[in-house]
Length: 505
Ligand SMILES: Nc1ncnc2c1ncn2[C@@H]1O[C@H](COP(=O)(O)OP(=O)(O)OP(=O)(O)O)[C@@H](O)[C@H]1O
Ligand SMILES: [Mg+2]
Image 1 (cartoon, rainbow, N blue to C red):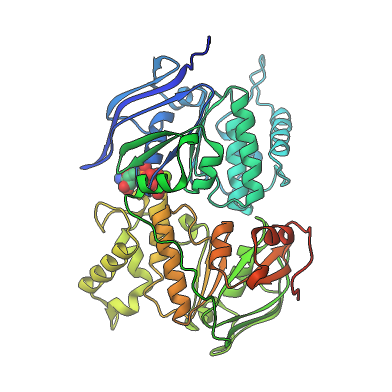
Image 2: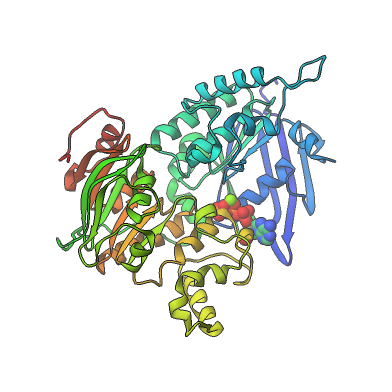
């Protein structure tokens, strides 16, 4: 190469419209063979659209895309699949009822040279080996729907790695991963990169972006506002570039709660997931739940809420008494905002407004009659409060960018009279600006007396927001941290079983 860096990919003046909305405006983007190039930007900036165009899944309206010197045009899906470019989507796209192995084989099948028969044994061997390399321990025969989002991402990754890869694009792979899983993923990405695979990485956690990438392109409202060498920029500069305003740091004021218990969980048990969990949460308190993926954190929230079968134990609201079923939980002022919002929290084929008001029918209807004016008003208020980027409130939720979908699924709860909020990964996939708004919302709600039980894999979020942290491991409470005991290291030690300190239960 004689010292030259050869561009594997060159996008020139790429533009894209959805209806009248210009989503990408004359974007230039290039990628060298040995490079890890990150793309950052607010929710709805156009990041996913750009990489979908690069991978061939979405047609470009104007502009050219050259890959290894020739135009990237395809006549069918097979050509796209065999072109050496793989895209790992923001939300894993898998067949939930099929097994891991079946999913991996859906778009890439090794056939015997002569007989053209599909060789399951060989595919199984390859899949197992790749999963082991990625540090995954689940069975290739388990149905994908039984896996956590993080593990589903790994399945997606394996499908990509089975092909001859030249370019790997990962769209926000770390949103629901814990630090150790992020480390494992980054190691895989670096190894691939070292073996000659170019990488495009999209992420909202800027510290990770800075740690991994060689160069960073900043998109804002569909335009490239900067291309920076990673070594020559900082987190603050990136935030300024992508948001265009200053972000108020999350409040560090006194983390005090009332001291009045609002919910008491005793000896809660859900077979296979939650074992003998007991704790209390106070009015006005944010109780963080840490732990590795698979530790049973989401399952704990679901069991408290009554969604998951309980084999022993009690959940008692100080005000409303014993809670067993979902209906009772809801009528007692408990709300659950789930992690996998695309599947559990939203009606994708309904409008933004309908999604926002469905939880607020009490406020927007009387005697079974909908008041459309009131619905619009409440919808608009929530849209503005959470800065949902959209073309109109009647747009279908499925057309929103990933982060904006997350905002809708959160926002729809927030006109409620909630006493106890169970929230799973509050800022997964959400940009820095909206994240600080969500944090402010949680802080203010706690100040107003709400009890919040929050599962988060984002270490900074967990530590900054929580008054107290319970760390789970294998379905049990491994320890509890409060006040000055709270640190990233302490959480990690408990989560990985290196320590059994803390108050314990
Ligand atoms: N199929 C579609 N129909 C209409 N509009 C769309 C469609 N897909 C994307 N958009 C719009 O294009 C814009 C850019 O979306 P995109 O998914 O590329 O954003 P993003 O930068 O990936 O955001 P996020 O960080 O939230 O994932 C958004 O305003 C979105 O609503
Ligand atoms: Mg996206």
